[in-house]
Image (cartoon, rainbow, N blue to C red; front, side, top):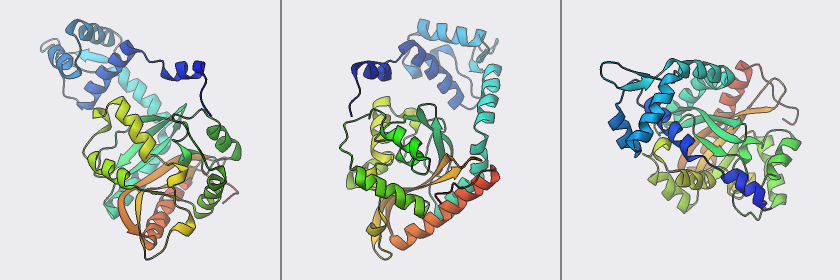
Length: 303
C-alpha cells in the first residue's frame, strides 16, 4: 500500500526556518531556567549569528523569550507559560497517570511512559524512570508504527490506521494481525518481543536523550522499537518457565465513551520468564485501570 506522489510530498514537506525557531525554543526550555547568550546559542545550535539573532529578537518581541537587559542573556518568556497551561489542560489525563508510572518504575526499576495519538502523531506525554525519554517527543502515526494506539480502540479506528499509507513498504499478515488484536483485547496488555538487533539498539541508546537524536535516527528507532504486529507475542508463544526476550509491555486507558485514550508502556529490554511477563502485565493493566477510573473513563464492551 504505497503512498502516491502528492502524499509523499505532503508528508515530506518541512520548513527549515521553522525548524530553527523550534530548535531555539527547545534549547532554552531544556536548560530549565539557565539563560544563554547569543554566541552560546548560535554555537550550540550551529546557527549563523545573524540568523540566530533574528529568531531571538522575534521570539522576544512576541513574549516567548525574555532578554536580561544587564547580561543580554535569553530565557523562556511568559507566552510559553500561557501556551503550556493550555497544553496541560488539554492533556490533563497524563497528570493522572504520573503516580502510576512512578509506582511501576520504582517497583520494577525500569522506565514507564504515557503516550497518545495527538493529531496525526504519537506523542510522549509523561515519563518516569532511569532512562531519558523526552516528554513531548513525537513519531508519525502510520503503519508499521502505532499498532498499540488502536489495538484496544473501535474497529473503524483500527481499520483507518491500517489503511494509512505506511512509512515503509509492508507485507502485513492480516490474519495474524486480527488474531493478535483479539488476544491482546482479551489479555488486556501487549508484549513486544526483542530481536538481537533490537537489544543492541536498546543498549546503544540507553544514554541518549530524544533531544540529542537526529531526526533520521529517531525515525529509525520509532520503526524498530515501536510495536510491529510481527514482533508481538501471541499467547501460545509464552511459556511460564521459559525466558523470552521482551522489549516492552503496553496497556490502554479509556475515556468516558470507552474509547482508547492513553497507552501506558513499561520498558523491559531483556529476557524474562513467561510467569514474570504475566506478573508485570497484570500490574500494568491494574495501573491503566486506575488511570481510567481517575479520569472517569470506562472499559468498552469488548472487554
